[in-house]
Length: 218
Image 1 (spheres, rainbow, N blue to C red):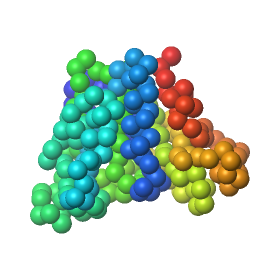
Image 2: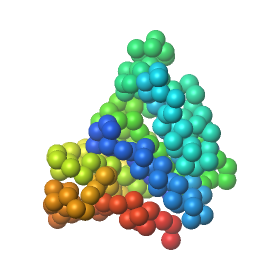
Image 3: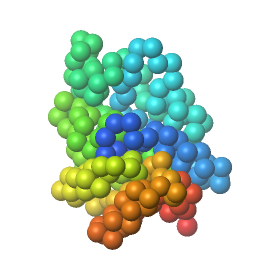
Image 4: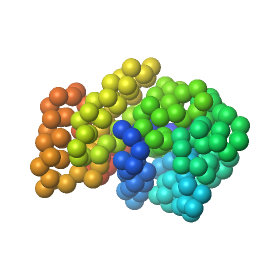
């Protein structure tokens, strides 16, 4: 990464699209900031529909107090809802690499206590022409990888496959799993959490307060 590295770096990935990565990231950052923790967010590349007026960079910047173009460089905004390298190709814009994204990941000076990088799509979704989210994680070498998953039907399969893929990556980040939209009154949600917690050697969280408590600096 360019510039000074945050004291603790978190990369947020999803088991797929629409699992709530940006919502979780923004609430986590906003809550930590409210407690006086210096935070910053980065989205190396983003794609969205041409009719969208609020992008992930706007949401993350609103949580950290940063300009959206600091969160995601303006030339990495792609107005086609596809994986970023595919969106760039469809728009006739130049291809880019993981190394390009890493070079453009610039942090404030002095560095924040916690820096968060949100990827696009799922764990194996292309982030650039030469790599997916795991490739990006290997280059960034974060302290923590936060896997956001849905709490409902199918999440056991999605979480296991995503963690197995992450485990094969050349990094030493600690994985955490957040079951987003968890409803303690939903029997399936409770059973999914219990099964995952019993079968996997990974911390399974099911609420934002628990996540904030886990990531709050000592």
